[in-house]
Image 1 (cartoon, one colour):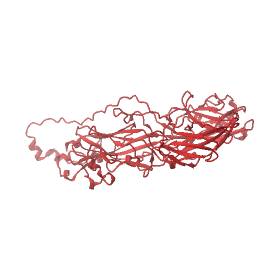
Image 2 (image 1 turned 180 degrees about the horizontal axis):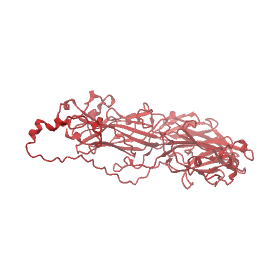
Image 3 (image 1 turned 90 degrees about the vertical axis):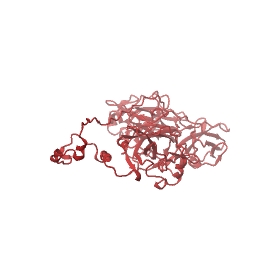
Image 4 (image 1 turned 120 degrees about the vertical axis):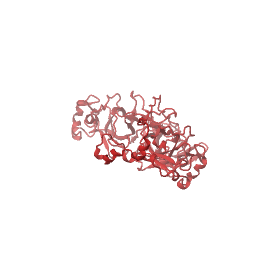
Length: 615
């Protein structure tokens, strides 16, 4: 029992920002090992219930002693008999827990996915024919036909040999939008995919997507048109106005020349946002951002919400929070750019931010006014176009009394545009997780189809050889393990059920060290979830390394059957039923086990990069 005096620390190191919460360790013994013991047992204090005794504790808090009796017979008769000769001085000291060496920095770059060419379009004189690859995202996860539609029209066929789904309808069907320019007629369709959860689970490994496709026809020639290559709708959703306008917003790089390939920011970062209007009839227009609100979910009416542009173009964030947020000087009439300092909702459980804006366009020849302006605060209100007097109403109300319902020229267009989710995290902490199993992974951001490498380990400072097991794991969107939705991907005492439930590649790896167990989890998202955050909470056990695995202490993966990481496959036979006490022992051979809790998160799982263009 001497090894029970050691210090046991359970550590789970995962491929992202480590947030380890160790529960109290539980020590169990089998009935065969629970024999009465005297001296050794009395020397082990119950630290879990009493805590460490503070040397400065008052004497009144200690049990009362009969000091007179103690002085007469301090050690008792037996002890006196033992002290007949010279006594060796006590040299016992409190054990010192060795310091764990920090991991060295790793040269790591987040892998950015490449947008696959998964949609093909053929336009005839009266119909549009669209083919969508079942491996729409290029990650090996096939989409379900029932989740694919074009303007509300379902899939009409499937080519199994080519692995494509077919949609074919008349040009006027499926909520098509007809746009007319001086030279062309343009029919625009929206092909939408809404992922469905795996049967019996709340998760999905494909993300929703909207792909815009167009058919162009020359107005003066009666010939069939060649189709244009479709492009992904950006992070921003777009709205096509009846007057052939497309409003959009995009996240931009610092040079404003390209769209930003990631939506992850840290507090203090600057978010570059560009609002634009596309005009297909070549009428010069000027665009304005009228108002913007930020929420934690896509619903603009949800709470909490933060209105950072209001009063018809007043960017109030800088005045409200002393930030550096501001509009940039205009370089093109059909674009307006602004910088927003990254923020998080106080007390929010999710790092996600959704931005919804009302965008207006006027004739480029019309001057700005109180209802059509772009004003920033910096020791006063300043307009992006230099006409600062239109910003005078930003501290009051810029209503019709402060300007006109429509600008000079009597024409304006208005639409909605949204961005999200924008992921804002705290500054990089000590990041946990493994990238190549030799170093910790310096990022907790993954894309659907990525593999998350997770290692569970036990550190024992008294050098007693132990074997570690992951008993069960549950994933949630918030740290609370009892919240819903939740997904149990390791259960039944070490059965990694994810591969069987979702046909994924998740599995335990063969054990290389007794005090470590590694497994790979294929990245997923919660179906219909408003946040890409995933928190993982596991129960981890440790037994003597000499004790063989059994039905309650195992690491089993599914691949055309249940297989154990240590080769003892028979212990996995109960994974499809119940691996309870009737299928194994409460404690392994040797009568000792330890148990604790460990949690990870947030793990940020995003959809494959899909927004690198507009319609």
